[in-house]
Length: 249
Image 1 (cartoon, rainbow, N blue to C red):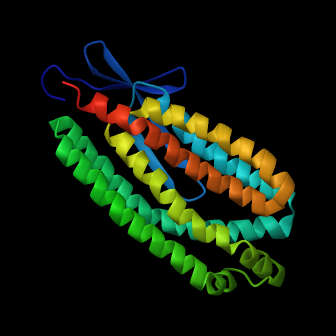
Image 2: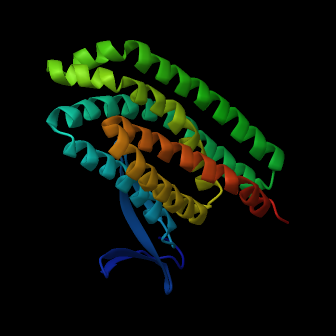
């Protein structure tokens, strides 16, 4: 770099450290978001520990879902995998609005423009809900055809059809979560994201404990739906505080 800036890469305690100025170091944390519905590579300058815990919460939630599905047998876990692919595709489409809200919210918070902030949330959420509803409808009505396209095993086909309702519900429920992810990320409220994720995971596990033992794989899917709902509700509870902090003079 020109002027007083220089770049030195080194490792320290398993992390990559970037020295960008005299004695000014910031950890460069490279972490991979590995979710059942999407995979992204993020490379960011990051000083806190909130975002890695938030990412880990997603991973743990879907890893638990997969692990519990595996206990139900090969046919059930194969059917769940087929249905989760529907959610993955829908999530890619819905995530676009979350990215848009992240950018627009960040701009409005930086400009201290509350009207622009509210408008960005309203418009991106509206269109995300429209797309989420369309995705849910497509999965519900065209799901049997997609299932037959993805597997030739008659048992897996029948089982996947049996749980298709839950797969059709996930894009609509996930839309609100993804939107709040974008809003809170744009406002740099990663600590709130971590805290709400921990609370949502606790609700998820409590609901799993009750639902799966009484309703089997239906209960497992219901617990995942509860997880999405819990994330949306806990985020919504923090929105007034987020707005107050973001636009405090």
